[in-house]
Image 1 (tube, rainbow, N blue to C red):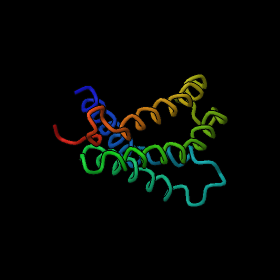
Image 2 (spheres, helix red, strand yellow; image 1 turned 90 degrees about the horizontal axis):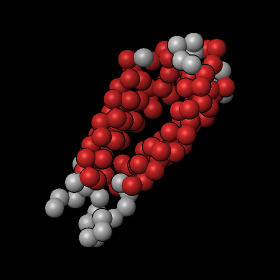
Image 3 (cartoon, helix red, strand yellow; image 1 turned 135 degrees about the vertical axis):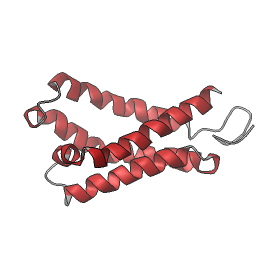
Length: 130
């Protein structure tokens, strides 16, 4: 039951985070490092991926590949989060300490997603019906 609750929390979090890429698009565009081409398109693409993978996590058949996809996505967006922490003046709404504090949470989210890539103790695939 704990794993099921965890999966729905993680999925819901990523669905909401992905939707937020469209609600607050201008903020996400500013987060993008200057070497990333077409920042607006990348924000939209990452938003679709976050929401899509979060939703896919909730379907037992797709739990495992969606969890791996979320791990890849978290690794891919990490440079943008570092860029944000390195340029706190561009984000006056956030205290610099919060920008730096959020970086270790990427590891927490990666570990959380990884938890959903693992087989259950009884040999069932993650998310499979009991």
